[in-house]
Image (cartoon, rainbow, N blue to C red; front, side, top):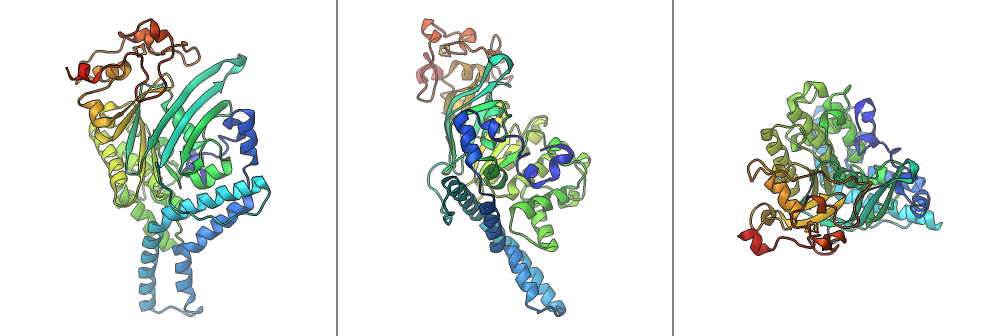
Length: 446
Ligand code: SF4
C-alpha cells in the first residue's frame, strides 16, 4: 500500500490483491476453498447495484430533468443543494450498503461454488461482536521444513463501540495477526481457526471478496507508517477523491470534491492542506490523511496497526483521541482493534487489553483494571507495566524465544520469576490468563 503503486483502488482499500492469493491461505483444504470462491460476474452485479443506489444517480437524474436543455442558474443552485443532500444521504447509507454488498458477494461466491444461481443478499445487520477471532493460528513454512509459529490459538472478540488494544513486544505476532485478518499474509503462510466479521470468515473467503468487500469497506486500515502509505506523487485531495469514488456511492466532480473534503474534516485534516503532496505534510498531518482514507468506507471495524509509531507524545495523544472519537461517534457501531507496543497509548484509548507473547494471547483484561487496580495477572503483563519509566522502570530479564523454536511448556518460563516445574507443560488455554501461577487479585492489591 505504499509508494507509487499505492494509487489504485485495491491498494488504497487495503493493499495489493496479489499479496495473498490462494497459497497464502495455507493448507490444501484452504487453498481449494480459496480457489473455489469466485463469481466475478456476481461481484460486478453487486457493484452495479451499489452504484444504482447512491447519490451519483440522484445527481444524474437531476441533470436529466432538464431534458438536455440549459439549466437555469436557480436550478443549478438547487442541483448543488441536491448533490450535497445526496452525498449526505449516501454517507449515511454507506455502512448498510457495504454490508449488503459483502453479503451479496459472499452469497454469490457460495453460489458459484455450489453451481447454482446467486440468491439475493439481504444485508441485514447482525447481532453479536463486530469481530470474533476463534483459534486463529498462523504458521510460516520456511526453507528446510522449518515452521515459524507466528500466532497460536488466538481467541478474542471486539464489540461495537469498543476499542481492544492488542499489546506486546515487537515480534510477538501482533502485526502478523493483523495481516491475517486483512488477507495480506505472504504465500508461505498457513492459517487455521476463524476470524468472523459478522458471518464472514476472513480466513476462508477468497481474495476477490477480500479485495472488493473487506479491505476498506468492512475493515478500515489505519497504517503503521502513514507517510509510506500515501502515494507520494499525488495530492491528498486526489487520493481522497479516488477513495471516495471507489468506496462511496458519490458521482460527479462537485459531489466527489465535497465528499473528499467532508472525509478530511472527519479526520481533522485541514482543508487548506488538501492540495499538498505527502512529503509536504508533517507526521501528524500524514497520520490524519491516512486516517481520513481509512474512514471513507465507513467500515464497521477499524484496524489500527501501530498508528502512533514515530510520533511524539502530544501527537500520540491526539492520534489516539481521534481514533477513539471515531469509535464513540453516535450511531456508528464502529469497533477498533488497535495493535500497539505503546502502553501509554493503549491505556489512553482502550476498553479492553489483549496481551500477546511469543504468538499467544496470554491475558485478556478490562483496561481500567489492567492499568489501574487490581492490575495485570499474568507475570509477563506485570513485567510490561513494571518496565515503564513512570512505574517501576525494571526491565523484564532475558529475551523472547525464537518463534521457530518455542519450548513445549510456557514460552515465558525462562524469564519468569514465578516459574515452577509445572510450567514445563503448556499453561491453560481457556480463561482470561494463560498461566499456571497468575497473580491473584489480592496479591496485586497488596
Ligand atoms: S505459566 Fe509459569 S512460567 Fe509461564 S508465566 Fe505463568 S508462572 Fe510464569
